[in-house]
Image 1: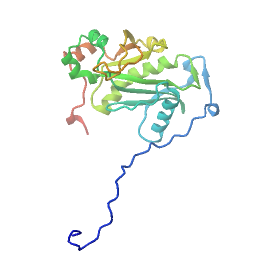
Image 2: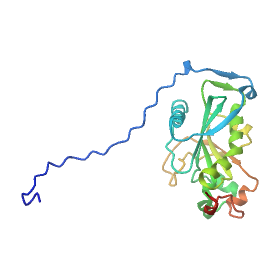
Image 3: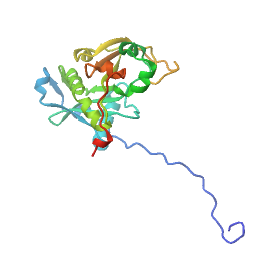
Image 4: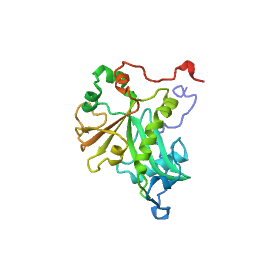
Length: 240
């Protein structure tokens, strides 16, 4: 119609894509927070691991990890669970469990995995990709207690969230740290990484080497990971 002279259209405006800005999180003033310093974890009161849902508490979790974890707040895709470690209304720390690493020769050999096994059942391994005790919290044995609690409840929580239960946990500890809390919680040391990224399939990413730790969540985890036994799932017919 414009070409025929029937209407006159305004000039075309250049389209600028809208970039969603992350909601700012106020800085955390450590000096204004109550220092929690106890000789034994039993003095801390009832300790709980609560799943962090999207919203205000999620932003607080991210702010803690961004501010106080050496690796910061990761961009995680896929299945994941974020926990806040609390006691009687006080925040003590943060945990993140997410997808396992793609390539890890020590793990594959330890399990007795073939490439086909790994491709089919890699999702049954979950990575403890962040673990943080807040810097004003000083409670003896709290780290190992939190790890033990997570090991006891993550199968149930993952089953509820994603309709299947993992059978093995993994984590990577920078060589600058001793991994004492993982050892105290019965995690198994497997050796060192080769200094590659979690998804680096082609040896393109050079990173610092880390200690590898594993924690079976059930005795028959190898049989499950090799496909010799079924893993626990919630069938669609059972969902309501």
